[in-house]
Image (cartoon, rainbow, N blue to C red):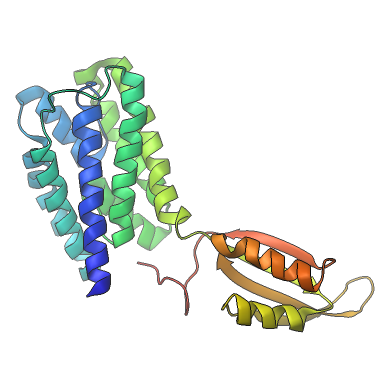
Length: 278
């Protein structure tokens, strides 16, 4: 229940931030967006219909696809996210005072808010619907980056919007969507960023003991030898969070200042002690 409560909180906060980016920055600057929300914005420009209502209606169709290809948990969270996104889009519509009249600033900060909002929803295990559902499918089956998958589908919708908002506003929209895609990747991957560290030292057992004792992390000791000297060597391999890296460096330096240490950036870690992929 605590996990579900945390995910519901992420969905609500993410949906609210997403709606602010659309209604307080993108629409007042006459910009568009990608995916279903982009279509909803164009419909709003043409008819004045609430983006919240059209977003809900259009996503209802895509939920059928999501139900068939995504796991039940993701579909449930996505349905909740679509509801709250549509609700907040409806409630925050027609702001009395736009945050800025500069379309470039509006595009930059719309991208930031929309990207943060979608990223928080992704962290919960859901999507905001539309292209996000397709992005989840591509991420699950083909390993595509969530941000890049969204970007591809957004380009199609944004390009089509040029006939309604003009070339210049479309260019600003591309800036917003690109920033949003990068923010999604940062939120989803940056907060879960891990580092794989390879340590070669004559005092490997001592370092490994400190890693398991002081850092409370598992470590694997591999046996090898120098290619030139043929001397036997022990190699420690450990995966840790980015925030733990400085502490690991301190431990290694205290035990063996001459230890050979290689640090690798890790995209994703699955298994005991780490998050299981959604």
